[in-house]
Image 1 (cartoon, one colour):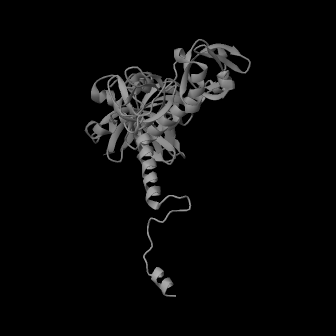
Image 2 (cartoon, one colour):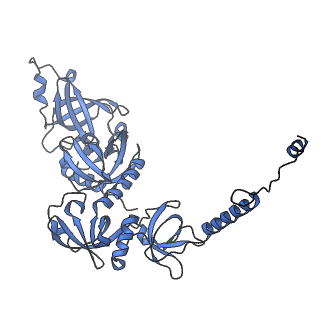
Image 3 (cartoon, helix red, strand yellow):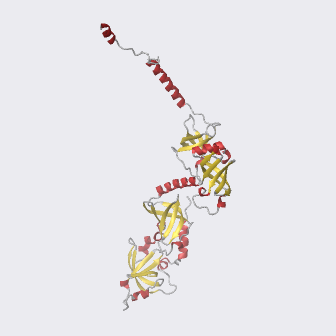
Length: 411
């Protein structure tokens, strides 16, 4: 019908009411207002109260406080002493994310990285538990299965296995100490609290281990402590549970019969990293001492007659120590015929002092060839003392020198 064609050609209005009675323009306007309110609310600074758990980014480190961005207009502060280790080294860096608790809103937002004993209340213990914050507590007494720990006026329980990373043989050693703990259980609105010191120690060890493994590259000089001494060397604790092996052959330039002659468990020691193979770290001690071979070419000239001490005998010859760290070989071919099989060995029993003539010197390959001429007379100076005109030191004094060299130097 003509009327129908007329209506079908007419453009539809954009303002046709919706089923709810609102036009599209009205719906769009309402959405914009809602978005504006949400944006304004999101930009408005949050109001914090004491005891609130917060998380922010470290933006600056000052001489006494660190500044944390927690999303407000200003920046919150935290005392720097809460972020340092016992050696006063700062354990965080700009850009790190920190969890903390609000301890004051007067004159600005002040945070604490751990809940101090004096600030502990049941509610704050609950807040610290949910935020994963450390708390300070005093070990009051040993009880069945662990310890009673006082955090402010609140009582907490620390299982004996959670007091330290190592086994505690004598529970009394921890009594009276103030430690930092982490709350691992919190029930009944803070009335039942279980804490652990072990988890924090393990976290610290993990951080230290990561640092040590980054620093333990060939050529690095590290400080450590002797953890154990075995027949073939010593294991050195470098920090964070990371250990390296100091092989007996790398302890001294002179021959070491037993590592226990030079080091003992607990000794402080400075070592050099020789090789890193996967998780295995090889260490050296003699590399931090002057090598006696550096001047061997000057000392041991051809045909020089010197005294030495037989250290060991092999089928092909005898090894003779000319000075600590310098061994020469008297090859079997240099001995006069005796008419008996291995008769030459009678001239060079281990421990004997002998006179030798220098036949060859190869400082680069650390080899000296000698010929044994005769047994040294009792009281005759050794090779190095003849050259240096001073008495050679015994093994005891050598060990004393090595111990002195192992002590870490103060920076």
